[in-house]
Figure 1 (cartoon, helix red, strand yellow):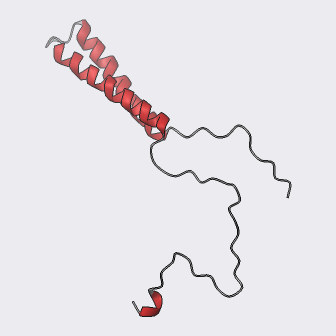
Figure 2 (cartoon, helix red, strand yellow):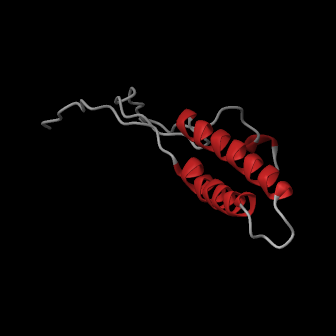
Figure 3 (tube, one colour):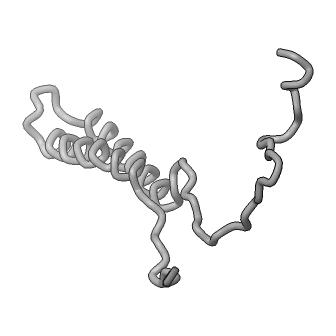
Length: 99
């Protein structure tokens, strides 16, 4: 790469280019939201309880612990996608743009 192309700065504005101020639109960034973190945390607790109850189950699997483990493990694993896909709540009042 030549020395000309090593300019510092993220954008190079040409002659006569204008920059506009922020329009008020917010861009949602990626990552886990606070609500999603709570869901994932509770899923981890439910999965831990499921594996603990599975360790107490009888080998033939015909007792309360085996049934409880199946329910808890299924619920815990089903909560993970909801925790990942949880979105931030949108503002109830959106600005009205006429032009």
